[in-house]
Each structure stands twice: as structure tokens, then as C-alpha cells.
Image 1 (cartoon, rainbow, N blue to C red):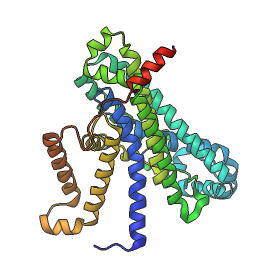
Image 2: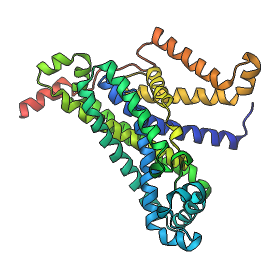
Image 3: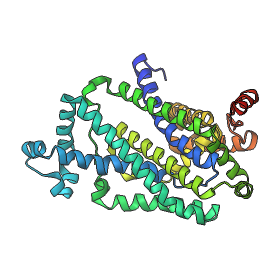
Image 4: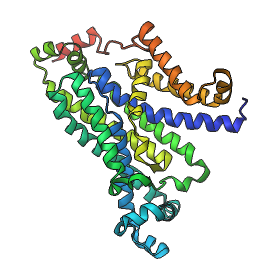
Amino acid sequence: MILQLDQLAVLVRETSILVAIYGIYVLSLNLEAGYLGLPQFGKVMFLALGGIAVGGIATKIALLIYGRAISANLGISPLSNLGTYCSTYQYQTIDIINNIFAKSPFEGIIFFLMAVVLAAILGGVFGVLMAGPALRLREDYLGIFLLVSAEMVRVVSTYTPEVACGVFGAVVPDPFKWLGEWRQWAYLIVVVLFLLLSFVALERLGNSPFGRALRAIRDAEVAARVFGKDIVRFRVRVLATASALGGVAGALLVFYNTYVQMGMFVPVETFKAWAMLIIGGMGNNVGALAGVAVYFILDRVLSMYKEGIRQVVNVDPVFFQYIIFGIIIILVLMYRPQGIIGEKPAKTLKRRILTKLQRGA
């Protein structure tokens, strides 16, 4: 299969967008599992909460603000009859809002930033709520609790139309509509900027005394307690930070699709993130991003040649992808358990600089 130049550009662009979004998602998992050692098997819950923040909260705020224009054009009030809106009028209504954003880019950008902030807040709040059980349950039970909690959020949201139009899913406004055909390229720049900000912040956090304390808690919790580390405080902060980042990733994913439906947030999304982290390397942010890149590049290659694969092995390409990634994970765990880029010692100031600082003090 030979791609034309324009097709290759689109493939690279779409893959890069997903790598950036899932990069933020996996970096947040690395903070919890790689640095602190939490068995975070409910990570997809925060991806879903980011989607709910966009499709269930921010979009309703937009419907409230632009309700007069919608009523004038369609003769309905979406928020007063949510069932009819979700089943019949979503696309027409969102088109009206998109036209407003196309004429007023500033309003679209404000809507986008508001939605991302709401996603971070919602994710962070739920992260703090999850901290209670995280402090009381043993690791194996905590993993099960988080997995079940994520499924509860998904199922309840699916059958509650008020959340994000339930089983219909919610169409969300496109804040970058004003960019026309350059919309996707601009969105690539936006998500890459979010990824860079997340990466720099987590790198600084990991190399700070806070990050070194997380490693100490992960490797020897009793010893960390003896040295006066407040384990509860560290866990709450990590869960809040990582959950907020997961919410941001969910919001960016929904804006990329301009649609959210709870069926997008099944448990396999959690284990997909774990696969990326294991392949790339836990406890290393560069390794986490390397795992994301490897996963999506392989995924795209296998998708491109799926018909050839079907003819050669007579297996559904979707299942064949799972088989390939399963084999890769097994090989990594057997021969390279630290991942492609293993964990490295935290960076600290050189001894001579520390000595100068001590003398200056």
C-alpha cells in the first residue's frame, strides 16, 4: 500500500494528535503508578470525566448562553426539553453555536479554555475523593476498587441523559471552527503545547524533593514514614494532580472527536495506557511518551495493512492487533522489564553547587 503525499500528511497529523493526547494521559498514569506505585486500574474514569466536563457541563453552558439564538432559529429551548434535544436537535443546535464561533473566534477560544479548566477541576475533585479508599485499602483491593469505580461512572453516565445525553452521546461545539481547513493542524499545535506543558511540569516535579519522596514511598513506605514523610499528603496530592491531567486529556480527546459517548471509555482504555507505559518504561516520563509513540505507530501500520494480514493469517485484524501487542508486552517483561527507556536517578544539583549554597547560607 503506497500513500500519496497528502494522505501521508493526514496520517502523520492524526497520529500525532492522538500521541499528544494519550501522551498526557499516560504521563498522568506514570505519576501514579511509575512514581508512587499505585495500582491505578481505573484511569479511564478520569478520561471519561474530562469528556463529561466538555459534553455534559461546558456544552450546556453554551446552550444556556446562546439559547436565544437557538430558539430563534429552531423554535426550541434545548435545556427545557433535554430528551428531544438529545435525540433530534443536537446537530442543528451545535451547528448554530459553531457558526457563532466561526464569526467570533474569541468566544470559541474562551469556551475551549473554560471546558479544559472544568475538566481539570472535575478530574481533580474525583481524584481527591478516590484518595480516601487509596489510604485504607491494600494494593490488590485498591486496584479492583478503582476498576469498578470507573465502570460505575461509565454505566451511570450512559443511562443518565442529563450527564452527556446518555446513550445518544453528546455532540460538542467546535471552538476552532473559524480556522476552516486548517482546523486540524491548529489543533495539533494546541495539543502538542498541552503535552509540552505537562511534560515539563512533571519532569520538574519528578526531579524535585517531592518526586524523590514519591520514589521513597514507592520503594520503602515504612522507611519513608520513619524519616517523617506524610504518606497521606503525598498520595492525595498525586491523585489530585494525575486525575486533573487525566481530565484534561479526556477533554482534548472529545474536542478532537467533537463528540462524546460513554462507550468510548471502556476498561480497555485503562489497560491500553498500561501497555504503553510498560513498553516505554515506568518511572520515566520520556519512556512513557516513547511507549505512546510506539503503540500508535504500530497501531497505524497494522491498520493500514489489515486486509493483507487477514489474507495471510486468516484472523480478524482487530484481534490480530491485540495479539501483537500482547506478544510485545510479554517480550518486554521478559527481556526488558524496565521498558524501552528505563527509570533513571532523579537529577539533583552537583555537589560543588550544594557546597556553595551551604556556605552562602
